[in-house]
Amino acid sequence: MNKRVWIAAGSAVFAAAALALFVKLHYFQTGEPLVFEILPGQTASEVAKNLQTRGVIYSPFWFKLLFRLSSSSKDLKAGKYDLRTSMPAESVLNCIKSGQCLHLTKITTLEGWRSEEIAEVLAANDITNPRAFLDIVRTRNLEGKLFPSTYYFAENTPAQAVADAMTAQYNRRVKPLFHQYPTSLTEREALTVASIVEREAVFHDERPKIAAVYLNRLKIGKRLEADPTVQYALGFNFRENRYWKKGLTYKDLRDPSPYNTYRHNGLPPAPIANPSYESVLAVLNPEPDFDAIYFVADNTGRHDFSRTYDEHIFKKNKYRRK
Image (cartoon, rainbow, N blue to C red; front, side):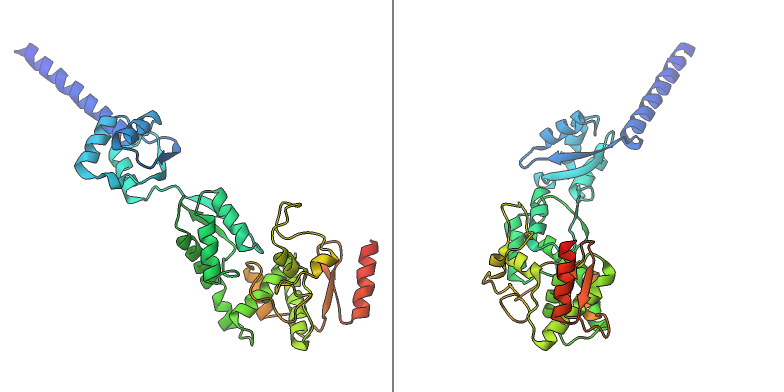
């Protein structure tokens, strides 16, 4: 009798230890983070096997059993997920089904980029179809409203959702400026000037001065003669393998595009890039009592401003000699 008691007690202790080990391994131990991908058309068995191979789960059988009891094939959505090694199968399944662990890619769009440059970054990171994105930008006239910032997107995000995220940032950050600083310009006109300022300015403190120059020119009916508008009109330069061609020629300045402000009076038809908050603010709140209508780069990234053409030519020749 005592022997049977000892055997039963030993069996109970062993079972309890095994259960404790199972619970510890299955529910409380998670390891290193990893990105796990489910490919289109994969079955639950294939996913379970890959999860075990990557060290995410211990038992493919347990994962498949849970899947059959609580899920359907549509719950295994193709995509990349942020998981960890040694996760409970229940947690993995819930994570995938809910989309809470969907892997997001960080992208940063820079101030002064045109929509094509944004589309290239989106395509390079498999975020969305670049042509679909550009179609939306052109149809909705969103150039200038794709706010430069850092975004997190899942792969294969619909182009509309990407555009909406960027314009939502614009509406939150920039739109209030138009109420704070009333202007005779329309929103589109102000963004067009701001996009030119963005392409010209290097230092924040010069933006209000550069904006004032272009606004002064508009006021007196003088052509803007802004190099960035010509660069925009020329599009992609295959020799330099980039947008925004450097070293414009006299032939470039004669380009007939309506965006060429050397050939056409007033503003170009639309923004040429997506400006920063600071450039829009500069247009809405330009340098006060600043009557310059010319500026030239001084070879340091800054600019020298002039009121008269003769003064401008003198400074231009001076910096050219340097």
